[in-house]
Amino acid sequence: MTSIQELMRQREELENKIQSLKNTEKQVAINEIRRLVQLHSLTPYDVFEEVSIKVEPLFMNPETGEKWSGRGKTPKWLEGKDRNLYLIRKD
Image 1 (tube, rainbow, N blue to C red):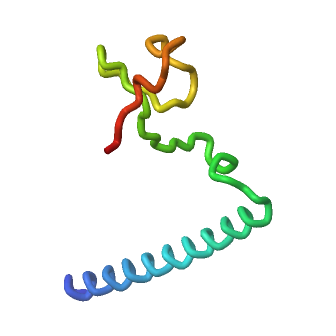
Image 2 (cartoon, helix red, strand yellow):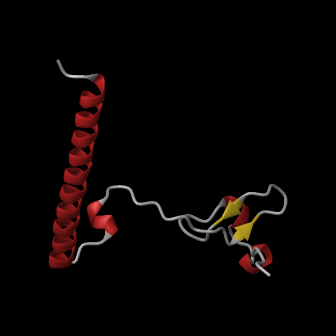
């Protein structure tokens, strides 16, 4: 009859083998992805449907505290105004 210690040792060996195989397969996948990205000159935008890049806000509405990064549609509170007056100073 197998002892609990023997089963635990076997489980540990299996877990180590599983982790080693996962690491190997992961590296193979990474290498293939890098090869394909280089071959086809892909960007993150080509590969992933949603890539969000955090952009710091450049402008702030002093009345509401609302901020805008300067990307996309100009907010109503800034339309037709001198943007320099609303720049967030990063001194």
